[in-house]
Length: 413
Ligand SMILES: N=CN[C@@H](CCC(=O)O)C(=O)O
Ligand SMILES: [Zn+2]
Image (cartoon, rainbow, N blue to C red; front, side, top):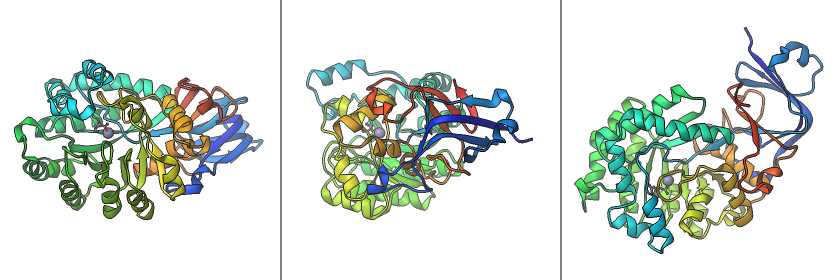
């Protein structure tokens, strides 16, 4: 039997178009339909338009009147550290008092603090903890979320984190995409032996992750004092041979050359990029690397924002994501992120929407399936309380998503 849903009379249906990332000036090109409807069949978009017989085809209780409202693709949060134990409120306040993120990390706080709490947490605790965040993300229109490991730094805890992601995928509507980030910090067991730690990950953890399909991507915190360019290149090169797609935490604190490395390796995405060099920007644009910008992290760290305008003008495909994590930015607020991108990063409203939908999907290698409203794509979409997408950046920090549909099912109303 065909399962149908009709979203009718939408004031606006707004979407980027295509099955791959939008680069440079293409980012601001949105297709806008006015006063039209979307017919959904078996979880996929069948058609967009106005056909008189659609209302007869779809039972009344499966019709949503969207008059006076705008419809957009579901948002894709392509960079989060969703699964972790414990909290770090003291460190937040130390930072506000002037201590830097790296100083806290060098004193054994930061990622290693969360590592201890994550090692101690039970699977059930991690599931409950993350489930609460996911419900709130869904209410803001997020229908796909990437989730990184990286708070275990030992075999069992890394596997536990990724198994939690797998379990969460079964328990709630948001699709989770798993990334292995074992190389997030050097754990105390390998103090001053970063190379040995990478060999441990390559030999004792990653083959099992690959074999059990626990993660689709491999990521690394490529940063001064964490993992060098050479270590990151080695890890990612070997990861690719095992079948992982590649991501990299690049040029977050200093300009180390992470964006250039992402270009060299044709990584799917390079993320953060607060200090990406001009050469790094060019390397990403030339090699089809999605430049994933995380404005709420820059905001929480009180660092200058990434150079979104220059990146887009240089032809990069920019995505926006929250980087939700317990340290550098405890927020998964999509409204705040859009506000920061448009107010401070010189992105237009249209570019911000593409960055959060189709380009977010491309950062997860899913642009052929999600990220836009087009026939054949999965029916992941949001209905706003207002008639235009322009209300998104205009409402600073306020959630204006009213209805969320995932795979053709209403999951928030
Ligand atoms: N920079 C590295 N990793 C995270 C922060 C992790 C943490 O502080 O717990 C990030 O992307 O910002
Ligand atoms: Zn991150």
